[in-house]
Length: 143
Image (cartoon, rainbow, N blue to C red):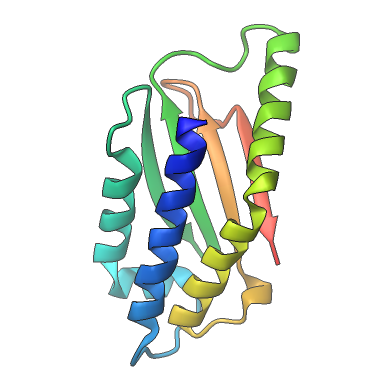
């Protein structure tokens, strides 16, 4: 529940930052190009994401037109057993689905700041075990 509240607050603050960044903006070919011109945005998001978090490290990135939130757990969460993995997946599906409108607001705001059609933008959330290069869980939000 604490992570859910923190994530919602972070996403809302991102939306507000992007609304301010959109003023006087130019148009870009994709979000990655926009982020290259606005590196402070990613730094601010990551800083906010990691405040007070002890059980994971969080990263923000944009690849092409995909906004990515990556969570790297300190302890192994996925791959313990099939039943636990399914329970975790159901929990994440439910939690993220309940916040989907917040994620679509982020898509809208980032796309607007970059001058890109929102139908070309998605947001992906990835959760990783420590020292693993493949996410144990992924959820993608599109408009």
